[in-house]
Length: 399
Image (cartoon, rainbow, N blue to C red; front, side):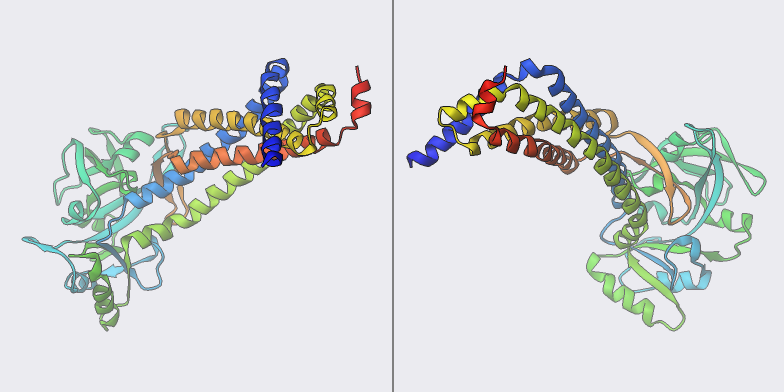
């Protein structure tokens, strides 16, 4: 056991010596730390956009909720359902009911132009026509300012996300629809979900405004239990009067978010990799400088009987420690500056704006710190090998 113990004690001794001499190389060490911190902060910030979008989509769904579109449609914009088809869907087995009937909301989806608060540019904002069961179907719906619109009137309510990100969407303002001014009478929340990006109005009012007749684009419904989905789906797909695509709501929103999530995630990782190369070179420069400055000390240790392995490990430990410090700083800055930050982006599935909040999750912070350690490992590997291969005689002669 003496051999392994001696090897380990050498690693500890050299590593402790390296750490104690860090103040002597404060400038180059800070450069490496700040470089890694910048990479991690940017990576975590960009990826928190994707996580925020995914969280908004997930918050929009419930296990017992379903969405029904026209067969072949992948989004509401491409779907059309007649009023009689809506009636057949509402009669399907498994749908939850209350004293007013089936908890199934037939809905319209159109887009209007509204200006962004941040850029004063035009943005496509969803205007959703809903029916009376909508507040019970959509997750955690509640009015937080003003009141619910009156059914049959051209009054609208606005999601908190849309009210925050776009101009002229406060209670008391009005929006132009079909050359008429429709007053905003309330602001609502929906559990942080995608509905908070929308403007709601009575579907019966929206239909004539856009000459839709007795048609809708989707039916959102609540089942008595998530286990009822298969029976519900089988009944609709077997009905010769219908040509529809029933989906679990969570699957529908996962499908809607996939393109945008992959786009943002891919962009974030690409930026992180490009910046990571720069940070690796910064770490290489720092560690090569450190090895050169301590060439005589390392050679002295080798002459005293210290092995090459502990020298390599000690230099790697120093590099990883600097990278870890930078990673923690970068992750912390990203969390402080971006977690919960509100924004809006284009949802490519519906070509309308989606409001969301950046979400810096714990797994994302860990991912950033692990990436920092990868930078530190590669930044310290080659200098560590060089330190172990320094000719003892030549290094001792250096002044």
